Image (cartoon, helix red, strand yellow):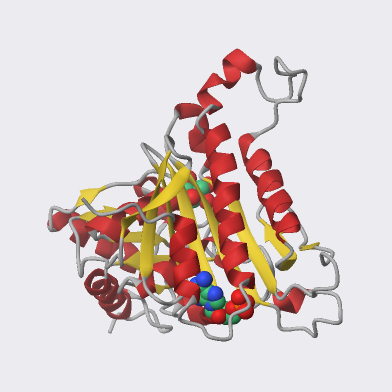
Amino acid sequence: MNRIVTLDEFIIHQQKDFAHATGELTGLLRDIGVASKIVNREVNKAGLVNILGVEGSENSHGEQVQKLDMYAHDKLIECLKNSGEVCGVASEEEEGFIKIKSVGKKEAKYVVLFDPLDGSSNIDVNVSVGTIFSIFRRKSNSKKEVNIKDFLQKGVEQVASGYVVYGTSTILVYTTGQGVNGFTLDPSIGEFCLSHRDIKIPARGNYYSVNQGYYLKFDVEMRRYIDHCSDMNLRLRYIGSMVSDIHRILFQGGIFLYPNTRKFPKGKLRLLYECNPLAMIVEEAGGKAISAQLERILEMEPSELHQRCTIVIGSPDMVDELKEFIERYKPVSNGVHK
Ligand code: AMP
Ligand code: P6P
């Protein structure tokens, strides 16, 4: 029987590999773990909202019932503000970034971007949702206020990234570039416990994940690849919550694609707090993540906080295969295929 290793213990142990570490990142990662447990508590009650009062009404404590993604947003902001390790935060739920006053004299050196509750439309039908986070070192002078350039960094600059899936169990998966590890929440002790050490994505899998409903709106090269997946008898799995789809692919292999459509000509998913953090995890686990225009996600130069991008992410052999389809079938400028 392996002994229990809690998330806190694991994070603290990882710090030992960095002789000059001050413990700031350790503190920040632990605070994100705490925030995830608080969000988990409310997500698991979501089904009871109709008993406790629908959103916008007052619950039995006379408190305003709020949308769960706003609740998750508020709790994450609260935890990060109190951590003292963060000088700025950006959230899918907030148009601009939020400056965080330093606690005492210390100038915090990290910025955090997050999607507080990805796939939140699934909550009302009890389908899994998730939180995604991305951590950068600030680039601006710590004596000055944090600015937008501290957030608009390439994915390769991430210090850490991770996600929490609130599903049949609640699992936190994160990386700091030294491997990918998963921690399952044990409600009996209120701790995330190491359950998936050093996760490696299979080279290929039997699943492909795409919103088939947009098939006719995809470019021809994407439709050719989707037809190929069907010809290869791969199984279509699409939850409508990117975190959950990527989580499955991380463990069972497969490929997730959200190409450009007429409605989203640049793609729907957000570069900074969906694609970058998940791309860091998948690449660290041995997978690949590119745009439908064949750029490496982690090398993409952000220009705005809520920038969208296309994405193809998952098992390395399957991403390489799709890259070949794109190169072979994408109409060239004079309209003639290669
Ligand atoms: P710190 O002084 O705590 O901000 O840490 C400095 C750098 O050391 C971080 O930006 C990481 O690259 C690395 N580091 C520190 N603590 C940890 C940890 N617990 N896990 C992984 N990397 C860490
Ligand atoms: P569609 C959820 O809204 C989300 O941002 C991702 O989590 C998910 O993969 C995608 O959008 C679903 O989008 O257009 O297929 O409903």
